[in-house]
Length: 271
Image (tube, rainbow, N blue to C red; front, side):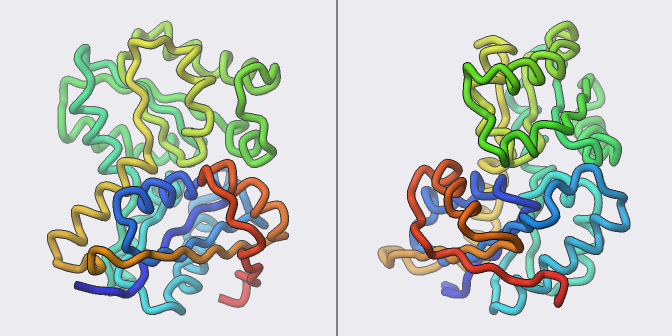
């Protein structure tokens, strides 16, 4: 048993979709979340900048005595997970591997779509791992650079002509490719599930990166006998690098609960 907290970070609020699932499946755990809202999105940055930001994010989280960290950011997971794991002495879980494994379990026609940030797609991490695990799978990738800023602005609901127009343009090539499974390779994208699902059709499996990574970290902690004692009530702390009023307002949407005025603003550049 281990009562130390789990650290979670993302470039903005998308990682809260992973936090929501963590709290559902591990209600006894203490979770500390950092959203780098002053520098979102990471997906259009260079690899060097992504690594610099990720190191700062982890250094902040490690100012707490963590037992594990979840990188709830597809861009960081696909670009520098290995480097971060080598530099740190705690378990660090990313979103790529658990998401890929779930997609391979579900696909029947071996045609898998991937939507992610430009940096995630360009890294080739999702595509390489799918090919390594199943050489018969064809991967059809589509960068969606406007999804994260639109979600962060609250433009993610069906009926919103802006997000529906953008999503329709991004997803059309994947529809034409006949994919039967679509990896949502960014933790912001589950908020777009209704929009994406309406465009792709009910026969296409949608894979939630935040959900799959949450289950992955639970498996790791259970295997290591590092879960918090059952029966106790877990807690969550929230930190952001920009105005917390905006964070708190949108966090309620991602978490499906009101966090009140509990978030704290920190200066991430000092880490």
